[in-house]
Image (cartoon, rainbow over all chains, first blue to last red):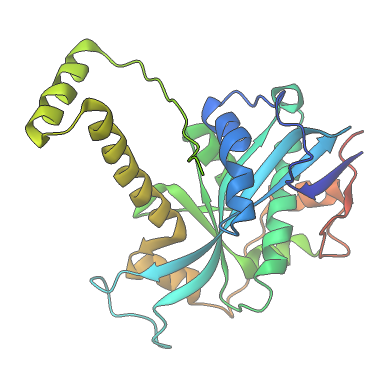
Length: 163
Length: 101
């Protein structure tokens, strides 16, 4: 049994290795500072104090490029969003279907945060083609303007989680 | 009060290093300053992009429009949600996730 906790200085990050050095470095050297300055929230799964999985959520906004199209009937130009900027499992946990469970954790938390926003959006950044396929498998749609950035409407996420 | 600093090393190909040294000389700054300033500017751009996503009208409409339209079933997401057993009882903040078995 693992517990989801907000990242804190008490967590042991030294052994975390997800196979992507960029994410390992981010978790060890940047995530806590950005959390403390309220720029991002990182949540971790722990096993006896050792971090074995994490994801980071950043306040975000979807903006309509005013140079394109005719706009929505409501005249909206922006939608509130949460940005799932990184998410990774320790290598020891990979290949066991746990990535989907970690994503559900991240999406569930995003839904709660976006609860008041009727038109909220969850945005994810894929680090490579595999990650992109992963997010698509779970229902995210790539944005045509930025193919490694994908989106899911919070209301769609909500109706798929509350069965 | 001293300002903390961090030493960062980078391995780069010879030809690229020569271009950087040349560019730094043209800019009239040290190689170190040139690289750090350029990286910092790039970092700010990337960070700004993490704060918002600019999308075409078409993308924007599909994300905002059709709020009454039926929600597509995301079968894999639904399966994953069931396996975590968070589907009942959102919000899930600080909830124990039964993922260890």
